[in-house]
Length: 167
Image 1 (cartoon, rainbow, N blue to C red):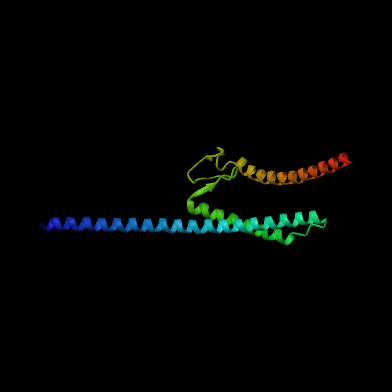
Image 2: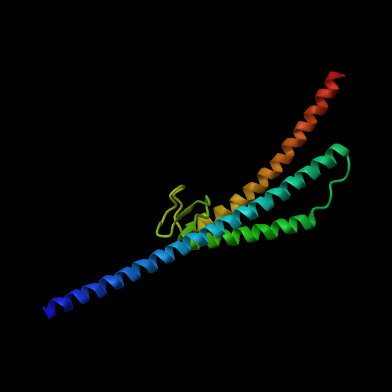
C-alpha cells in the first residue's frame, strides 16, 4: 500500500511539473502575442504619421501649383520622414523577431525562419542576387516617382496643346 502511495505521489509531482511547464509556455506565448500587438500598433501609428506628412506635402505642392508660387523647401520635413522610415524599419525587424520570420529581400514578403526559399517569389534566402534586387526595387520606386513627374509634365503639355488647338 505504501508503494502505491509513493507511485501516486511521484505521478502527482510529474503532473505538477508538467502543469507548471505548460503554464510557463502559455504565459510566454501570451506575452509574445501582446508584444507583437504593441509592435503592430506602433507600426500602424508610424505609417499613419508618414501618410499624414505625405498628404501635407502633396497639398502644399498642389497649392503652390495653383497659386503659381514657389514650392516650399521640404528639407526638414524630409528629415522627419527619414527618421520615421528608420523607425518603421526597426519596428518591422522587431516584429520579424517576435514572429520568428524573415523578410525576403526580393519581394519583401515575410517567411517562416526555416524556409530556404521565399514562399511568394521563390528567391533563395542568402542569395546575393535577392539582396541586389531589394536595392533595385528601391531604385525602381525612384524611377517610378520620376516617371510620375514626367507623366504630369506630359499631361500639362497636352493640356497646353489642346488650348492652342482650341484657339
